[in-house]
Image 1 (cartoon, one colour):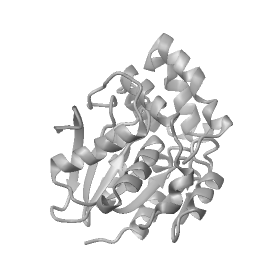
Image 2 (spheres, rainbow, N blue to C red):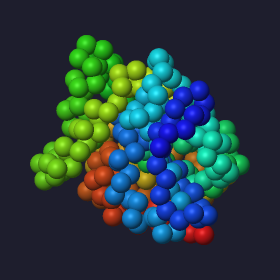
Image 3 (cartoon, rainbow, N blue to C red):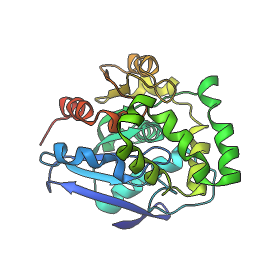
Image 4 (spheres, rainbow, N blue to C red):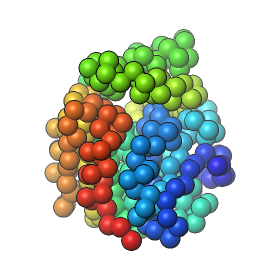
Length: 263
């Protein structure tokens, strides 16, 4: 389904029980709504689920880069407004986690609880260094040029070797990203500067990391973020790299259900 919001057409999916508390899922760079498929069954009985493709990803309109985190956060709030969602739990992975934190800081009245997954609140030299090479490759070869190196960064080699079917689905997902969306969202990520504001959060927060994530949102980084938020918790999912929601969906569902309050 699609709806107009914040000047673009946003592609979205809804699942679950009408009238139940909302959970909104925000994707990261080169993700689309399919990345949350494995979690629908565990959550749909007690919650109303909203998944959407970020700007320039999947079926959502691509606009010319650069994007900003504020613009991506406005897409979330605009979608809520278009669908009549007054308040929602908010789950985001990677850039989606950064966007979710931006929404929660700007509109805490609209966020019932926050779950940033495998993300950061500030840039570091090693993390910033990831992006210039992939920008160059994508500019030359398109999104296809970054498919394999993205998969390798997201999932450790033993997981890739053991789950070729999952990897094929992930590659297909990456290929649904437009070049403008890819470059635009990287630009938003490179403007990240939220660490000094995390202490402003006054709502339930669960940080989730993958135990084997080395760059995207390593456990140590996520714990440092957690320590800045009053009452926040941090859960590390075992045997999972950066896209820990796909690598260990059962552990992610258990962590999420332990945090959420069903209606």
